[in-house]
Image (spheres, rainbow, N blue to C red):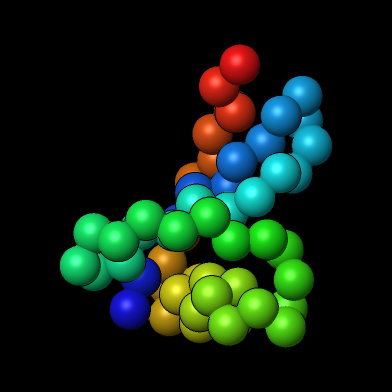
Length: 58
């Protein structure tokens, strides 16, 4: 179960998703629908979760 999903962008371009799970485990997830964590993001959104966006730190 996901607690937070953050879309990381650099110069307006998508880079990676950062997810924080309920047990505070942090993972970085590519935008690949075959990735099981990426599928969890789709479920998170379907259940009403909001994806926030952050600019990648330089």
